[in-house]
Amino acid sequence: MPLNRRKFLGRTAATGAGVALAGAAAAGPAEAQDLGHRDRRKKRYAFTVMGTTDLHGNVFNWDYFTDAEFDDKAHNDVGLAKISTLVEQVRKEKGRRNTLLIDAGDTIQGTQLSYYYAKVDPITRVGGPVHPMAQAMNAIGYDAAALGNHEFNYGIPVLRKFEKQCDFPLLGANALDAKTLRPAFAPYVMKRVCTPHGRDVKVAVLGLTNPGIAIWDKANVQGKMTFPGLEEQAAKWVPRLRSMGADVVIVSAHSGSSGTSSYGDQLPHIENAAALVAEQVPGIDAILVGHAHTEIPEYRVTNKKSGKSVVLSEPLKWGQRLTLFDFELVWGKGCWQVESVSAKVLNSNTVAEDRKITGLLRDEHEKVVAYVNQVIGTSSAAMGAAEAPVKDTAIIDFINHVQAETVRSALAGTAYASLPVLSQASCFSRTAAVPAGKVTIREVAGLYPFENTLEARVLTGAQLRAYLEFSARYYVRTAAGVPVDPAKLTNAESIPDYNYDAVSGLSYEIDIAKAPGSRIVNLSFGGKPLDDAAQFVLAVNNYRASGGGNFPHVAGAKQVWANSEEIRNTIIGWVKAQGAIDVARFASVDWKLTRDGVPVF
Image (cartoon, rainbow, N blue to C red; front, side, top):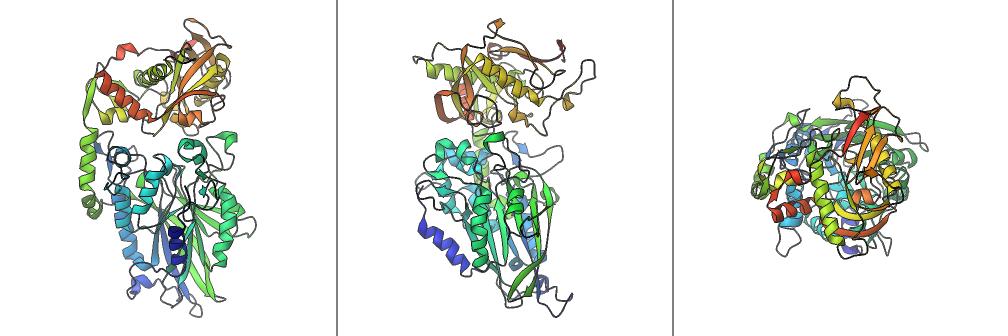
């Protein structure tokens, strides 16, 4: 996608030339934040940068899959309506002119609200709606947002339309046009914060996104955009921002802090590189971290070149937390200098939703609620995912059944039609459930909350064995005879549920008394031991097929078919076409956990 040069220059050069924050009326005592009482010989000033990340389409404190107010074990709340209340409280306390509000990405994918306005009533249609996330973020008054990897899930046209609908820039210094290698989005924004001393503070916000986009959304970005490393681009832009007179440099990075990657060796120190950026690139004062869906109130990293401390903070996903970076500055040598930075998070479950936001988007919300509650078929029995991480359950069998049937039909008449079709699926939500009787869109959609699409890859029996062994790392090694607590059987903290695959079409046991790498026993196909040389077609989601989770062999396996439709919609379409889910057609126990040959359950 070529760089919109006019727009890019307008947002960077113009803001760099001196765009002041809203609320430029004379500052009151609460707004002044003048710390001159500490040392009256020096001019001092304090301001606050607020941050969110991984909002994933959450405006209301609502779960569209359960059709009820959101709740979890920790009684967290979600949504921009809650965040808006917190933001207004901070602005009232600090003074609006003494605050900025930024985001670290993954904004327009994740809920049925965001899906509806990307696919059902898309913002890209002529005369189409304004995206609810754009409406809410504009109303709250965001100053900038970094691009997240999920921004690209619906394709570049949807993202570009969303960008136009936002009153703030979407930043991505390492999202480059594939042909020109120039920034495809604004790399940064420069904000002037007015102080009571007549000396404005120039605050630069640099946006960085995740290089994994090139893998995860290959179909949408290949040949159009390229995504070099965060550290590389930060090292290029931070000195430029300082040379342009930035007193404060903040990075909004859609990248976790840990330095690990679910892609293993494919993305070493790239997927979660925020701490590496802080350590290696001098001149950064603070980093708003995203992507990892973890809560980090404050994390300090010492820059190896300058010896200065860089403060990182990651607010919890979906609008559950709001980060506050508090900066204290002192005037010296003709400029503002950062004297100290601290960070903390506020919990959105402590406040009510802002009626300004809920009222603004009430119609959109109600339209989506009606959409997801449409009845599309019936089910012969209830299915639930609560035990899916430790048992072969009908609900995962259902996903695999639809995927295998879809691939089998697609390969009919091709050179691969004679190969057996297997399928992989994961437990994406332990609360997913399909009731007996009438089934709605939201209940089916709840099985597959991610925007994954379906592919078909050819693997050998030996490769499938290695694939299953890798998947079985998910379980905690548990000796025979030791009491079993199902809640403690998995390594879910380090290996998420979505990175454990059950494969249908094969029969096998996972001996959790054995060490990882030697757990798959009695592996068979069609009642006979699996032939290592035999070939199979694996129905697999695009995340896994492109290397997600670092499973062996699948990323390099021959692709014989691929589909651009989300698996969630494939399942919804299947239910609509069939009219009924006959659980007896597909439900069977083909894998189980054992210890020395004895079933755990």
